[in-house]
Structure formats: C-alpha cells, structure tokens
Length: 124
Image 1: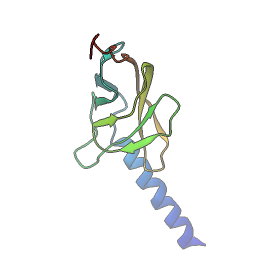
Image 2: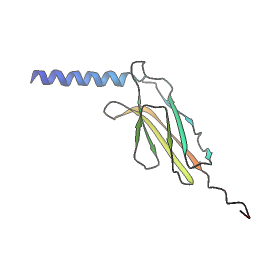
Image 3: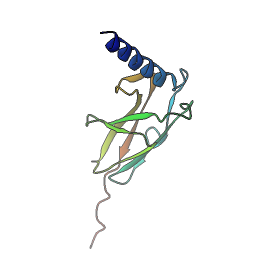
Image 4: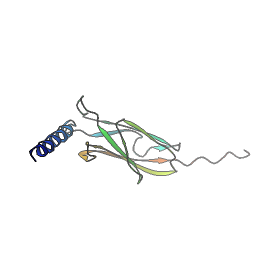
C-alpha cells in the first residue's frame, strides 16, 4: 500500500512539473492564416506559437480542431488541413498536458474563408 501511495505521489509531482513548464502568462498566437483571411486553395497551413514558451526541457503538445472534425494532436507549430470546401471555417488550438487536459488560458481560435473556385473561362 505504501509503495502504491509513493508511486501515485511521484506521478502527481511529475504532472505538476509538466504543467509548470508552461508559463502561467503564456498565450497562444495564431500566425497564419489571419482572422477573416480568404484562401483560394482547398487547403490551409496553420502556423502558431506560444507567446511565452515552455521551458527548454519540454515540448508543448497542441490540439487542433477544424470546425467540428476530430482533434489532431501534434508538437509541431504548423499543421496543414486539406480537402476543405468553400465557406467559412474555424480553427481552434489549445495546449494540453501529458493527460490531454487543456492548460487554462492557453488557447487560440480564428476563422478564415475558403474562396469558391472561379468559373471556367468562356470557350474553354
């Protein structure tokens, strides 16, 4: 029983240490696309960064969601969504801890628009 409690305490300490590697004043900045930007492709490359990054000893995990799709987890600061239909889309990004729990206040969201393809030129 004592060994189990020590293990649980060690796990809790490790989780707390991870959560503390992200500055409590950290904020997520979405660099591209810009809010409201019109994109003329059927894909978009989303770039983002932490304004107050984690300590050098850890790599943050980002969870991205496009509209109501399944979330994507990555440690990269860029992700490309493909096969997008014309219209307005919303991307949300948050930083999560080792358990997948979102860190408070470290979230960003933007909307952008996929432009419809131009009609074919007459006579072609």
